[in-house]
Length: 505
Image 1: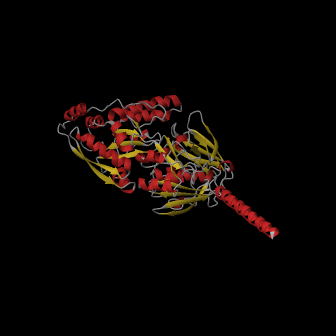
Image 2: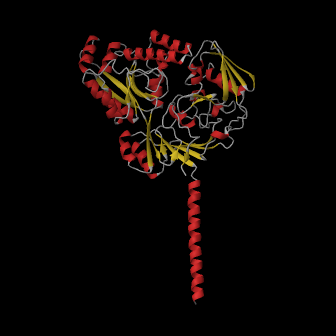
């Protein structure tokens, strides 16, 4: 009897230990199997090809994940080799010779070589090109592929920013067979392959196991981009674990609440997101510099930052951020001064103010900033009506392309894009030969210090002319699971680069 009891006890103990072992093993296996990520975004891109459309949400899904360039911009904003492993620039700055990597294939099996790179650049700069940054390629005279590993760009004139521009999403190298379908089924050379796109919900990527750079191969097996516009829903998704990360969280007023959740990390970095209220400089009364200056003096930037973005943000006085070379704080050029603003309006012929409409995208920063501007302008007798304009489709059609607006407000995300004021046409309809000349000098030199000095001149011209109301730079409000590692803290270029992302074991 005793032996039976002992035997039964041993069986029971053995079974318990076995159960514990299996449980521990299963838990360990589950932990080790965490190789997927669900990343949230506020805006869903209208397409997935950054070489044919401008909205930054496109690159935030596909750049460096699916698509790559001859060079890339790293997390510190520096130019690094990518599909080109090295390059040489002639002494006169007119010839760029790239040595291309071998052993690189597109996700559909097409081999990457100089002929493909040439075709991609020719597509971007061609007469029928719809590339959103076609101007980047305007100074290229010829593109030659003398052999499979060599690409030669010959320029019409020195272009000091060319290498930097070649690292942008719009300069991604696309395949000859797949290029026309990249908008909906993108094919690149990157560490992730496109799996699916469920409109209104998510884009799914899977790891490219044949990626050419084994040292930088993706650590995640799958990655999903989920599109959630409502900030409260974003917060709920983070807290429940339905979404693992929101690199650009859309509700700064909820940040302090999220800080209290030990499962989450709140990481505040810097971006190139310049919030500006652009004016149609050829439409009355905005064609009068004094009116634009008066509106700028009616704006208390600190009030805008507090009210629109809960105090998160850096006031700016020109189209430039403190992260950029040659930055000057020009917020004192037209400081907040209601009485001077009224006097300047009277001098311009508007002693009783005027009425106009701002076309404001639906995003919270734009809506809130517009409401604050509305109240501030009322103090100088100016009435501003707010018309909510769906972004990106209607805003692009009506404002960006159609130019049918008085004022609008948007966060310009592209880094070092002060040159947009020299474009003809561009939605500001701003023209200043002196400004254009400064930008030409920037491109004519490769000297970084001289470029920084010239950028200072360009900033100063804009701060005085006020073709747009310069408000603030938005920070990068990142919120993600505390065990997620490798996401970029800062955003030197609009992106969600995932190849280094992994879960802490």
